[in-house]
Length: 127
Ligand SMILES: [Zn+2]
Image (cartoon, rainbow, N blue to C red; front, side, top):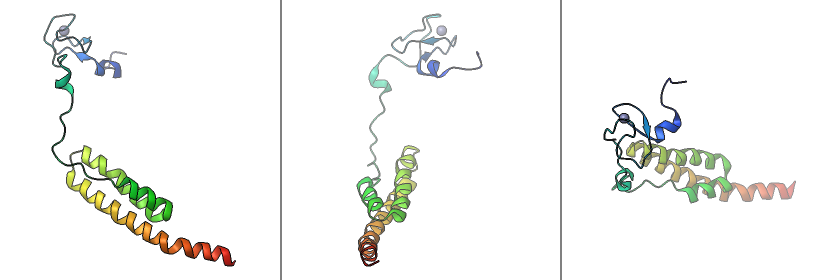
């Protein structure tokens, strides 16, 4: 079972010289004393805040739309779910597009719900 690094070893600070896993707090390899790529400096490992404004996924609108009119709401859910994925992948154009679609489908779902739900209630009342 030495085919490759295990999930545990990936979390460790692997030595570039001898390949032995080291604790993340170490700056030098415990076996060969080579300098390790990841230093113990916690600020170096922290992801830098993105200077680009995150794309909105319109979660509140989408949830409301799903409650109001499920078919359109589900389309909005699918688009909304893709926003963060595209954004995380660096595809900001696609994230923006998915965000717009999520908002439009959510708005359509809310409008459809406002029209259709009273009709459904009326139909259920009359039959
Ligand atoms: Zn080493």
